[in-house]
Image 1: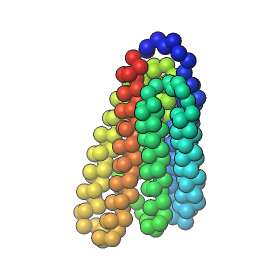
Image 2: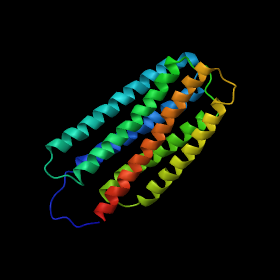
Image 3: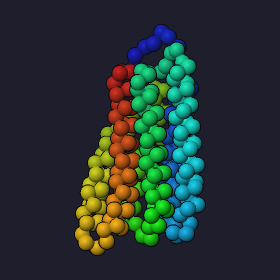
Length: 206
């Protein structure tokens, strides 16, 4: 790590950690949705919406701190990119839950559980990694594993699409379910964006 002679604003680390912890909350709500009776999904969606709003508040707090800080722990554009990508993850997860409720999906197709399990694991890894931004230690395994998970998510997504287009579902149902699995895939992509940003920061700070 580079030796710095100037002090740095350290509250960013806590805010990134809080944002990542909130994503873990969102991933647990996704898991809860899987096993829930359709009648209970609206209440889960409400809790997910509250978590998404908390994520928005965390992102706005980071942007406010960024705009009011003369000295930052790393490059401003990287802080902005990291905060935005963390926010995207929560947005996509909330959108997926909302679509399940709005479309009155009775049963999610086989494979969605695997998508959500990948997201839950990526959320855990991201929450574990954020505190390490303080020292830039033990981050290499994090971004390697998240990239591996994203590749796994791609494979699951492709298999899900093949399943949806196998003739079992009617056209309207295919459109509904495809939108849900596509949004979950976007969440996996957003986790990769976070990991790539962390890698960029670590390289710059080395």
